[in-house]
Length: 583
Image 1 (cartoon, rainbow, N blue to C red):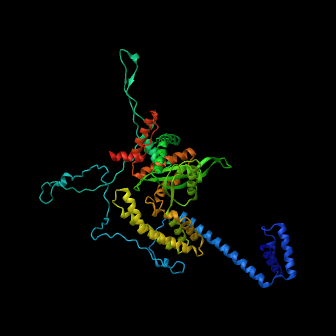
Image 2 (cartoon, one colour):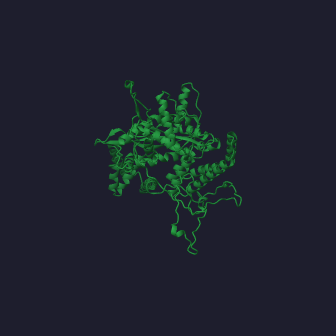
Image 3 (cartoon, rainbow, N blue to C red):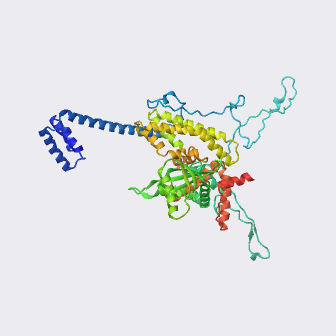
């Protein structure tokens, strides 16, 4: 049929003298030589037989042109949205703050909706109990060391100008506080061990005091220097060449090679690697995880035509575990050279319970593969539930709104109402210590306050799908409606959060670091990066001083390794924090 239409159009074009269009059809790369010959023959036959009228030819041409124009307009609109999105990512603000709901979002697709907006009750604060933050400069924290500097009047100024009598000092003083900084200072500890020998029997040998315990035997750097470098690189994201310049400035010209610092970091990693694996086991054992992944450039030994090393796109998979009461207990990064199903299977490992993530398909495929493997092996099938992140839904509709699709504003308003409802649900369980009562109360509050807002949102999306939507808006609708059950998981699982923000905040450290150290020089370097980012991220998440924790954990791990004790399950940051609180 398509070939006949082309022939008919070509015949009329020839009659009208539009030889250029005819040549375009005949010379089209979409037609093979045999089809071109057939086209020429049928054009001649149509001219001779008068099988088609001018009006029919014009209708066919107009119809085809309109289809082509509509298709090109759709492509252009999609490309414009993609270009606008990329420009916002590079030059624009990343804020997704939503303005107050407006009347514009009520009439969405020029139809009247019978649904009513679900109002979430707000807690009323009694008059006179609201506290407001004061104005002016805040006082410096009390925990900082105070060094008192007393300023007295000169002796001549202590004489009263009226009566000439010496003035008396008052008990009250005029006090002001100024913050100071002592710049880091490199110094050398010279260890001198006194030797002892028997004057009458020197053949008994020389006796000295014990060698002080050191992190690196016979090393030139103490543990505090090594930890300062580790924290600077993996928590403050300072590249080693800048750390080198800082050491040179603070050490009056002291030079420490980057290769030497890499060796120190490797020594730290050798002891922290087993601790990170123990952290992963802790996180999976909670039964409640948040998962996400982010890209990382890694040099895998490949070279370009000039013989220079090139980087490949690899990934750091992040997992955050939470206790039953909702408190985060740690974050762990795992290096993988891809983000395929097999990587997701390794990340999930022996996990059983509920995990929250975006709608990246390999997560569900990995769960299916884990279940299938257990079933084929005759083992107990693990119970794994997958909930989806509402923040990602919001981001899709926010992109649609930025591309000029006003109906997306209604979706954003309903998602904001969903978050307000969840906030009110969390207020309902404040002060409840028993975890079972806490979960029952939370599910009851969600059924009353949260479920109506979610029901209204999905009813709106189903109605919106019946209308022809532009690319980015349809993309947001597809993202929402295809997996509704995963977004409703928050109504049946008390341990489920609305979003995955806790792990995205942990991943932010990787994004900041990429702008400084840019890439990992090898897979070994990527594994070290994943390990040390895990330790630093967990310390930050739990409010732990990384220097204090690492000083204790590294020396304890070194002692155990020397004794052949490889059990480090009690050396994780979460365990250290519990032990510290117990003291």
